Image (cartoon, rainbow, N blue to C red):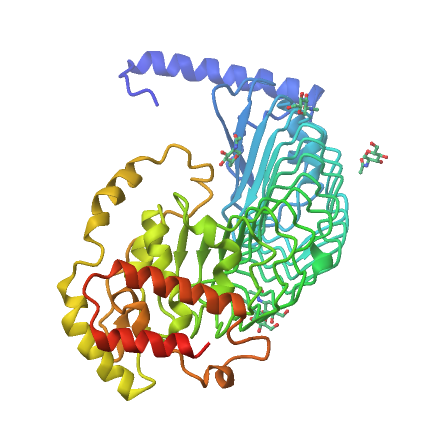
Amino acid sequence: MRTQKVPATLLLLLFAIEALDANRRKQKDKLIPTIINICDINDRDSKVHCYCEFSQEINEAVKTECWVFNGGIEKTDPLWTSFTSQSNIETLAFNVRADGGLDFVPSKVFRYVRKLKNFSIKFSSIPKIESFTFSNLSAVQEMTLTKNQIVHLSKHSFYNLPNLTVLTLDENRIKELLTDTFFELPALQKLYLTSNNITVIQDGAFRSLVNLLELELDRNNISELRKECFDGLANLKRLDLRRNKIAVLNSFTFIELWNLHSLLLDYNEINMLAQRTFDGLSQLRKLSLSHNKLVTLAGGLFEGVRGLAALDLRHNKLKRFTYDNVRPVYDNLKNQNSYIYLDGNEFTCDCHLAWMHKLRHEAKSIKVRTSLENFVCKFSIDPSLNSHFSYYERSVINSNTLYEGDEKSQIKDYSDNSDDIFHDEIDDAYADEPKLVRKENEKTLLQIPVEALPCPQDVKTVTDRTYTYPSQNEAKDYRNLIQSSTSAANNISPSIFLFTVSFLLRY
Ligand SMILES: *[C@@H]1O[C@H](CO)[C@@H](O)[C@H](O)[C@H]1NC(C)=O
Ligand SMILES: *[C@@H]1O[C@H](CO)[C@@H](O)[C@H](O)[C@H]1NC(C)=O
Ligand SMILES: *[C@@H]1O[C@H](CO)[C@@H](O)[C@H](O)[C@H]1NC(C)=O
Ligand SMILES: *[C@@H]1O[C@H](CO)[C@@H](O)[C@H](O)[C@H]1NC(C)=O
Ligand SMILES: *[C@@H]1O[C@H](CO)[C@@H](O)[C@H](O)[C@H]1NC(C)=O
């Protein structure tokens, strides 16, 4: 805006010239009636106003943002044709400012802006994307259709967009994903469908997205997943299914996703994971299952995900996490940058958790160590063991000498994080949550010596049928653990020794 003061006579003169100019323009308009420069719409009643960055001259705008102010604009409105005045637009965004101001995709515009790379519509009330609405836009790379009240996508809604790499459909009300809605999109790498109302994913919904790397389906209404719905996603690296309604996952659900690195299933209602749910995910590094309803984990659950190095199981109802569970990924958890988060469960202090002592000593990752050091379990089964524990707690644990020697190496390891291959892959948001007020029967696991962990005989009755108690290997591992722990402890009392012996004799 110019704020310079201009003498009144000069103003009058300028006004006269302006009027003449307008007159001349009008005459020109009569010759070519539809040429309105969309970057320079003077009609105050126009339903659409556009702001063009850098230049407003004919065919010079590259980046244009249009506001739809008044409702009722039609598909046939001459305004859409006026985009012919700016054929070099590369970025075009429609922001709808009036309720119900736009209830269709103004696809006529696409004919005139053949260089369009980046297209977006927000706050419209488009209920449905018809077939071929977005097709043959060969230059488009990024499309954003956030907050548009879209309920239905049709087969071939997005068709033959050879350069489209990112498609965002967040915050709509899409109910269902049909087969071949996304078709001939060979460059698509990211598909975002966060915060919709998706309940059904048809088989083959993504089958032509062979180069897709990221798929976000979080905050939807998905309760069932069939393995066929992931057909074709052979290159997918990250799948976000947080905040859905999934209760059960069957074996081989993710078998098509053999390049997946990161699988997020937090905030669902998962109470049952079939033993082979994660089979086929040979590249998986990160699995998060926090805020679900898991009580037990099948023994071989992680056999198919041997690369797993980041596991989040916080806020479930887990009572047990056995060495059998952890064994396939145990060595990964020793590495720098790994983590295993287990807070907010209902673990029972028993011999199944003995591996945590060992891992605490072997882990280089400060996150793994911290997590294990803060790990709390419930210690309540047998009153005689409890009294035994109290004795032990007084005599040994409170001396707090258990891990002092490690502090230095801990600091050194932390600074040496040069080879963190998947640093951005792993969620660093985890901060040590403030320690919960400890309930009376809760103990810090690492403060209980391995020998004092009870191995209750009734374990079988509280676990599911797939649980076998304990396997030969598992028993052997416990024995090794106990032996190393015994030789490390320098002041073992005779009663503890007896307890250890009786523990060993059970096998
Ligand atoms: C595309 O446009 C959207 C909205 O106008 C903007 O947020 C985004 O950064 C743009 N992307 C590129 C690559 O220019
Ligand atoms: C898109 O292009 C294909 C060929 O490349 C053509 O057959 C088809 O008619 C086009 N579709 C539209 C809606 O323009
Ligand atoms: C599609 O993208 C490629 C690589 O970025 C580019 O060379 C090509 O010109 C693009 N096609 C169109 C029609 O813009
Ligand atoms: C989601 O879909 C269900 C039925 O399929 C419907 O009852 C509900 O209103 C929808 N929610 C939204 C936000 O559209
Ligand atoms: C999810 O679906 C149920 C039943 O179809 C529906 O009642 C509920 O509103 C949906 N949730 C959302 C967030 O729309």
